[in-house]
Length: 42
Image (cartoon, rainbow, N blue to C red; front, top):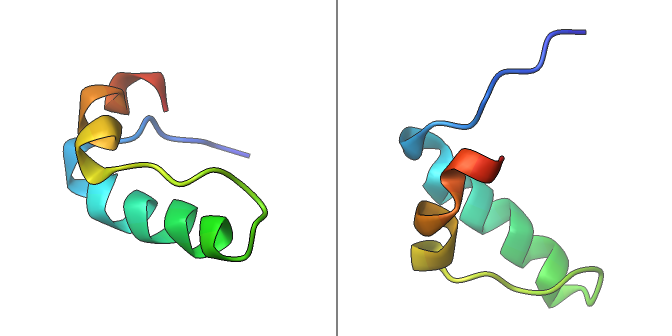
C-alpha cells in the first residue's frame, strides 16, 4: 500500500470528510484554517 503526503489542494476535501464524521459525533470538528495550518502533519 502506498500512502501519499497530504497537499494543500487536499485541505477542502479533508475538511469535508472530517466534519462529516464530526456531525455524526464520531470525531471532533476542525476548522479549514486549522487544517491548512497543520497540513504537513497529515
